[in-house]
Image (cartoon, rainbow over all chains, first blue to last red; front, side):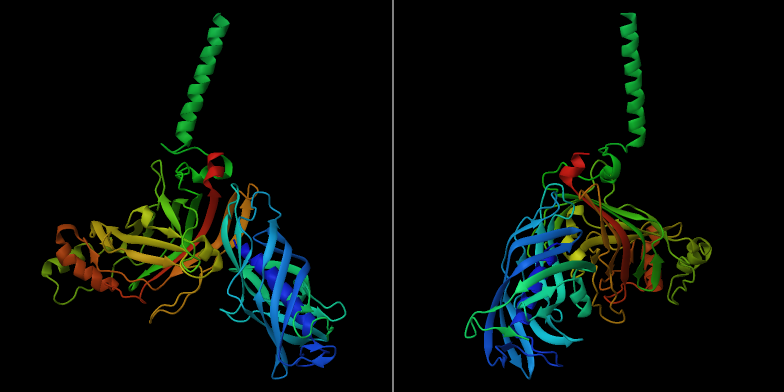
Length: 211
Length: 297
């Protein structure tokens, strides 16, 4: 009963990936954002897109052809943090012919806070916090033979692993499980998977994001 | 010619038999939908404003009215249609409700047994001797008290939010009701709540925030499954709760002696009961389908 969440989840995942690509450093208790091996000072804008991403809610899988994000990253008290400020999603579609999307998936209540954390030997990007600062996406199904037609809210938190060599962040069932995060429509679990590129857009443009 | 006449007669008889069978199987005036859609027979699905048909069965739960707790042991059905989502997200995109049509009951009148009845009523010292005498006389009858939920307002006063239902936040179902208390002593006009002063249940699948002495209780959006492709959504394990509502005093109890009996009943149940002293828990299975799909079956 909660289709919008899927898109939101996907967006969150992308953002998380982007954040991770930008700054996760080598495994440490408090990973920070780095560019060309140097710790980021001040703020940097990171943008990116999903190379692949899909979200499944209420038994319906939603995919978007264009899943972009815009995030601000910074280090605070020796910890990498950030926030997703924009998450435009275009040309999204549902795999259920009788439940097409009535409107584009919509990210709500931005910005969503994010932070880096180390789990095991990997750096993860966590997006969303407590209620009011969580990932929040509305998915609207339409169609004349869709019993769940209407707006559904996907909410929660999402964690993805950062891959410094490819400068991507990957969100899937495993990273969500490892980070103890999760997206839901009410109590119904939303599945989300996606791989997101990360690229600095301001003073560190063209700089390598390193772990 | 004779053979053709016989054939016509046979067809005529068969048609008549089928017609009688259909009439027996289908409730009077209801539209006979087929298969899984039969439960929507009383949905006003041909009303252009009705977007979806709703059929909800409350199979368990409880109603705490002041000092009296009544479990729901006889299923209660809420059925009708809902409009497309309206309003804002902050309001939960509520839908307008349209009551059951073709003679169907929007809210079925299923009598629930009040455990212990009203036995144990100790009439206040100041109660008139007549009331004391009546209570003594009907003591055995007071064991058997039935409580029946009834709509206190037109069905159009019901509000449904599918958005909040699945989100498990905010009001999923606003239901204005009254409780009909019945037995030989109470008569047939003993109600808690009325059209002018209903019990307004703002039921949520999330968590309530009641004043004391009640504590927060949690509902559940339930689990969604589809039938007939994506045409019917069945939500099982749904639980809608509200323990914030208030209840007025009972009225009309004891027939012409209500002016004497009402105070006794109110004293016994603890009415009027302010917010924080009452609870409604409805455990439901909810079926939803678009009106166009219902009409096509």
